Amino acid sequence: MTGDWVVCPPADVLPPYARFVLELENGARIVLADPRALASVELLQPGAPLATLLGPDAVSDTFDAAHLRGALARRRIAIKPALLDQSVVAGIGNIYAAEALWLARIDPRTPAVDLSARDAARLVRAIRRVLSRGRDGSGRYTTAGAARLNVYDREGKRCPRCGTAIARIVQAARSTYWCPGCQVSPAPRAARP
Ligand SMILES: [Zn+2]
Image 1 (cartoon, rainbow, N blue to C red):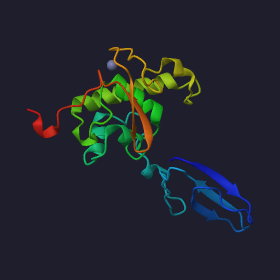
Image 2 (cartoon, protein in one colour):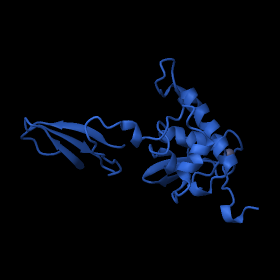
Image 3 (cartoon, helix red, strand yellow):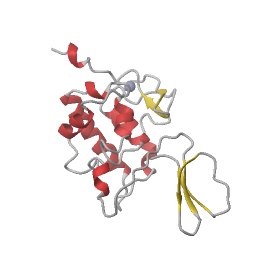
Image 4 (cartoon, rainbow, N blue to C red):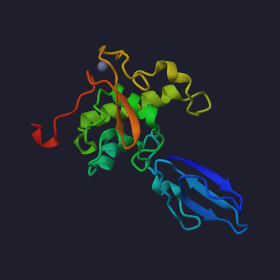
C-alpha cells in the first residue's frame, strides 16, 4: 500500500493522483491518491477474512524459511521488492527490508527465486532482529532505532561491516540502500552443485 486516503466533500474536485474513488450515499467520496500508482485495492464480500490477502506476520512463528522460499518460489522479481509484498510476508517496510538484507549479507537485486534454503533461513533471522529492534514496548514500530540503521539513507557513507561506500538503487520505484562490498548474490540455482 502506498499513497493516502482522502475524504472529498460532494462538490470538490478530485485530488491529484486519484486512483480509486468510493462514492458514499451522501455524495462524499473516499479517494485513494497514489502518485506512484503502486497501491492495489481488493474488493471483498462482507465478512470475508482479511487475513487471506496477507502473508504471515513477520514476527509470528508461521513466518519461517520454508514459508519464505515457498512464497518466493515462482517470483522472478528481486528479493528486495518481494519482501515489501505484503502477500509474501506482512509487516516489512522499506527501511526494514534494506536493513534485513544487509544483516543477512544478501544482494537486494538477487532474483527472489534464487534464494537458497540457507539464505532464506539467514534472512528470516535478520528480519526478526531488525523488527524487534524497531518495535517499542507497546509493539509499535518506531523510528527510535534510526541511530542504528546500517545502510538505509546512508548513500556514500561507509558500510559499518566492510567499509565499502553504501550504494542506492531504485527498485519498484522505491530506494534501496545496500553495500556492494558485503551483500553478495548467490549463484543461480541451476549453477549450484
Ligand atoms: Zn559492507
